[in-house]
Image (cartoon, rainbow, N blue to C red; front, top):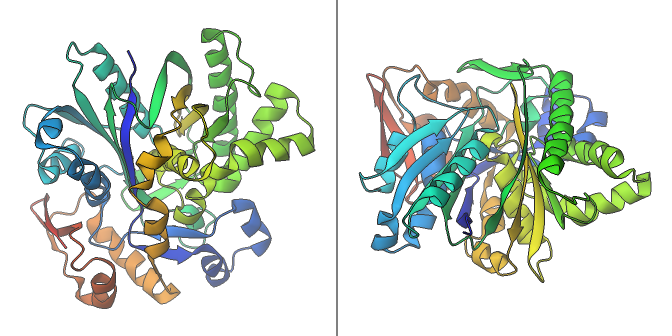
Length: 410
């Protein structure tokens, strides 16, 4: 039975900041700028949060479905590391504002940036196990950066956004290779969010953990799938992308170990099989649980698919969990994805000045978990709100009443 992604869309917000501008303003070492391979990062306005990111990613997918097709969605999972309550999952708000039927399972998954893959694999298993061939699941990986970690090298990559996927037995975008997954997990304190206002960690440890998980999850994959050759089995390689430069380094280390390639061969392989997956990430920043699937969309929109292509996919979440799995993108997938005009949406974002960015960062704590009562009046950023959100029929956070979040359409 074929199972995978029937439809997919990315929401990258309505505002962005130039990363070089941020480097200069913060006095960061510009010699390190090139290593990030980043140009811009998406910024949520204070009235946007993980719920609005999730709904705004998924709504175009549901709009393209008939009422009967929407009623076949029997599972909603939101993967996030930006949860808003210890008990109440953000999937409840998402379910409400997407108008999904009540005969539906709904919950949230959390394991840092692996949460989106955990949700996707669980949904795929649900579809595969169902006796009903028409059943569908909606998976959304949605996140937003915590309060800007000002003056650190974390700050340039802190992004926001969401990826929504319809998972079904009609995988027009990506068909999973059944049983072709390798895993690796252990306890490590590399990156963390111990409080809503703190996003921190050990960058060196996180890189080492990422690489260890990549190697061991791939080794496990090779134990479960016979005849794997990393240079021939996969037409493209897609990696979890907290920032594009990390992926290039991981690709180099991985291929040097797995295929013993020379420096020139590594560069050619990166450009041929991975670079296209990073074009969106370099303009959006780290979308956390959505980062791998943002990279998947970037690859489909920019690489060559003159025939069906097999992808090797690596997902990593700090703490840590990881998975290397594979699947096939049909030659017709780019035509389906192009309808959502993801690249055009990224290009339309409003570029912020540093004073505007500082203001939005100052106000961002108001939308975090633990806020009891708040009205989200955009008066302090009215011009930005009008330019970015007003009249666009996007979901925004209106107020919080005794911890209950209330939303409206812009």
